[in-house]
Length: 244
Image (cartoon, rainbow, N blue to C red; front, side, top):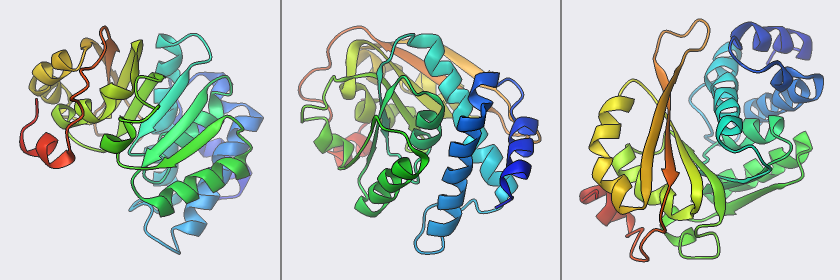
């Protein structure tokens, strides 16, 4: 990884469209530490296929800052955020690094990754951060159900499957924000039935681009308008074989 000054310059170079407050000295320092931990721990076990420092900044850090910006557009308070299938800590860690007023919980089924995420959150100095090792289908049957103002997910599954894994965690009135690639509009159409059955309505698709990256990226946003029926989520094999 670059030294922190080079990192800061590159982060600002690639962050066109990102609010300047997300690039404060304290935020840059936190984001830099996330990258250092990712680089170091990726030598020990599989965290990410993206290892080039430039690519890490663009595809992991800047990508998640666009999500953080959109979260503030929909939730003006100090809401509770859940990141489903957090993996190597994206988007949970960068979002927590720049949104101090929010509570973040990272959820992933792999305990090793959850331990890594929690340790990294301690290193970067965010305090209102939790990390839970559980399958989403199981966690949604605990006190985590309908407990969050914002639920996010990145690179987990197609929306027709993802909706059933994520929406049960949302409070009525909360927002599900999914990070998607070029197939976003196709996935939205495919997931129409599932989203309706789970108690949400479609709000909008927000397109965005990252400097020097050609691929299309989108944030797909839904609002929870009614409580999710207790039968959902089903077990994952049912969800994946027969999406709602």
